Length: 193
Image 1 (tube, one colour):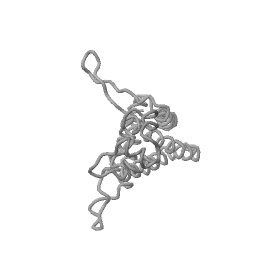
Image 2 (cartoon, helix red, strand yellow; image 1 turned 45 degrees about the horizontal axis):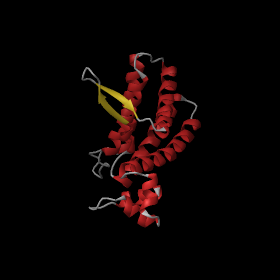
Image 3 (cartoon, one colour; image 1 turned 90 degrees about the vertical axis):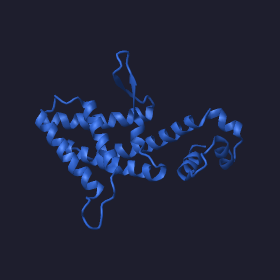
C-alpha cells in the first residue's frame, strides 16, 4: 500500500490521490487500507518514513566511509543533496523540510519541535554525529550543534531549490553552490571557536 501510494502521489495531477484510489490500484478493499491508514495524511507520513528509512541507510554508508570529519560532513551534505533532489523530482517537495516544525510557547515565542518518528530521529542523529565530529576536530564550542544541523539542512534545501545553472555560466551549478556555502559555513564555525 505504501509503495502504491508513493507511486500515485508522485504522479498526482489535478485530482488528489484518495485512499480508495490507492486501495483500487493495490488490489485491496478500501476497508483494508482504512484499517492501516485512517486518512491520507497518515499514509503520507508512512510514505515519508519509508523514504527516510532508505535515506538513513544511504547516509549511514556515506558516514561510515569517511573517517575525516570534514570529508564526512561534505559527503553527508552531498548525499543529502541527492536525496532532497530525488524527493523534489518525485513529489515536488523536499522531504528534509518536513522534519521540523514550530509551535508557540506560553510566552508566544516559537520553539523547535523535532519529528518524533523513529526514521526522523535516526536521520537527525546522523546529522548531529556529523556536526559534533567536525566540531570536535576544529574545536568549535560556541555554536549550538542543533543550530549547525539546521544550518546544514537549510543549505542543502536551498541548493536543491536553486535553478540548475546555465550554459552561459551566469548561474553556478547547484552542487557548486552547496560546496561553496559549506566552505563558508565551516570557516565560520572555525572562527567562532
